[in-house]
Image 1 (cartoon, rainbow, N blue to C red):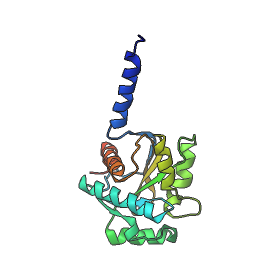
Image 2 (image 1 turned 180 degrees about the vertical axis):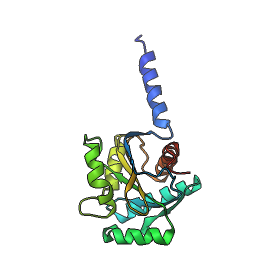
Image 3 (image 1 turned 30 degrees about the vertical axis):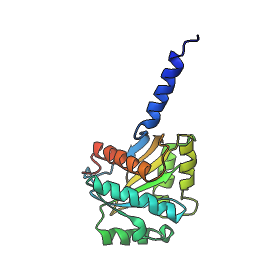
Image 4 (image 1 turned 30 degrees about the horizontal axis):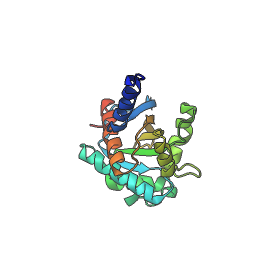
Length: 200
């Protein structure tokens, strides 16, 4: 009889990995030299997604989970229904909500190689301001998740200057893109932000 120990061990390890609550890690990141060292405690959450339903889902769950973890957060769709309205609308929303930071989330093309510095410089704030061709599709997130691999982009911006404080991309292997998956992602993100003293 052939030795089945190795295949069974491999299968068990695969199942264990699949059952892990979350599979996200920071792949590339940049912390601005201009950061004042103060944590941001009241965040406006912006989901940079083409479909409004996707944006609402992402922002709502992410903001609720951040708040549950002790970081005050509000979804931006309630204050800025159309991100293409530009920087003035974002600034008004920040003023109305008393926010000291803006947290963005987007999905990048899955697994492709790219120049991270160029990406950060060219797209981080441009996407937030709603320029043409800058939004991402949650469908891309789901497609990549089906293959157990996707790349997310997060940005934390100063509320007054709208300049980036922190940008990061992830190597993510979370197969669930529904509410439970976003909640796990949110909990992981809070830990990453706290470990860098970006939130209290």
